[in-house]
Image (cartoon, rainbow, N blue to C red; front, side, top):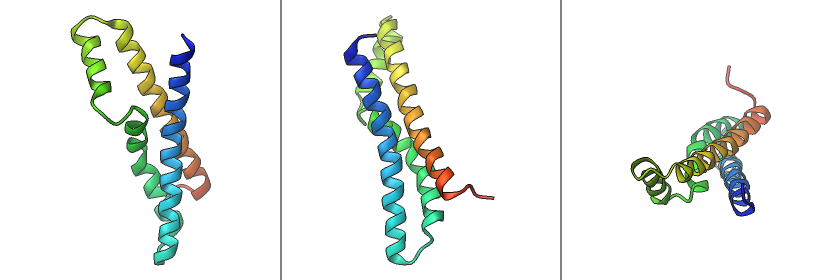
Length: 109
């Protein structure tokens, strides 16, 4: 694994983590201003923002889909494998953020 790809993987992980954590905390702070229950909002948003964290980390465009298409239909297995690893790393980052929020805010009964 080359250094550029490893850096991209670390970047994907941290971006997905940051979107999940930052969005959830910002939304909970907003619920404080309008008189809501911040812990409930925090749990709800962390669950909802996991997918957005993954999408943002993978650049949020059609480029990852083109890369998958190249790997599947044009026999470029290495490209497909790299994209799959990037997807798994982004999912891991978003899920780490989700589980951190759930640990802090408490799980629903």
